[in-house]
Every structure is written in structure tokens, then in C-alpha cells.
Length: 194
Image (tube, rainbow, N blue to C red; front, side, top):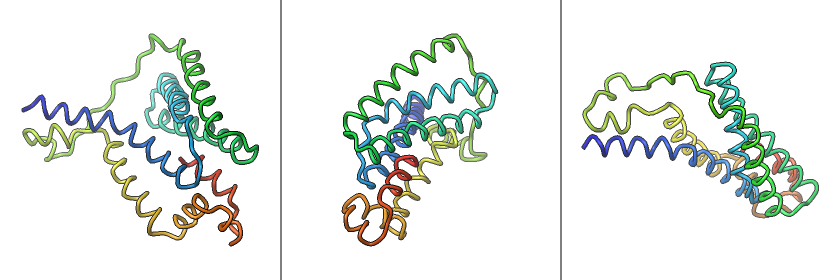
């Protein structure tokens, strides 16, 4: 039974990265932008985060560096697609290929680098439960934060005025523009946030 608990815990931990990326892509899709460059952005963000942690020893700074690198590449993608009207699919694929090559090139210098020991996380009482504690209550805090982000994004998109504006920009940009909303600015903000 312990092996099933480890399998469930590992699955939740490994799937968190994909869930966060999917949330970002959902924001892009709701704004009317198809972003096929997410893999390249994730690779560049990963190497930025890894290099930052190696040089500073701080996982928090690494997380912030990864977020910043992803946002910069997303903003570049947004400018190319939204302002210069490049093809979304071709630009996304080019960005994906760029990310693969750039991260491999920069990552050569970090092949033998080691990260500091990661702290162990566990809920005080719940982490000691026999099977459930191992599977659900000894995970990294980002796993729990991702669950909260899912709920917050659903609330934002379907229960707030800003979410309604974002969806209207994606579904009918002409109508949103006619109502006075800056469609390009909202789309660029959504792409960078995603």
C-alpha cells in the first residue's frame, strides 16, 4: 500500500508543472491567443530558475527568475503576434524551437551543477497518517498552491468583471473594441500573465 501512496504523491508532484502551464495556456486561450511556444518558454524558465538557484542557493529567487524568464518570452510572443500580426502557430513553434536550443546551449555549463538540499515538507499531524499522509500531505507547497490557483482562475474568469472582459476580448474582439476596451493591451497582459 505504501508504494501506491508514493505513486500518487509522485504523480501529483510531477503533474503540478503541467497544471501550472495549462492554467497559463487557458488564460491565453480565453484572450483569443493560441500559444504553441509554451514548451520553449518552460525550458527557458527552467534553466533560468536552475542557474539562479545554483548561484544564489535560494529556491525563492529561482522561482522568481523562472517566472520572469517565462513572462519575458511570453511578452515577446505577444508583441510579435498582437502588434506585428505574425502567424500565431508559426511564431509559437519558432519560440518552442528557440527555447529547446537556447536552454540546451545555456544548460551545458550546468551539467555537473548540484542544487542545495531541498527542505522536506509535511503537514504537522496529517503528514504522519499511514497511507494518506504519504500520498497527500507531504507534498511541496506549490502543489497546494496550484489547486488554489485553479479555483482562483475559475472564480476570476466566471465571477468577475475583469474575467468577463477577458473572455469577451477572446470571443469577440470587435465587440470589445466597440465598447472601448483596449483589445491589444488586454491580450498582451493575458499572454504575459499566462
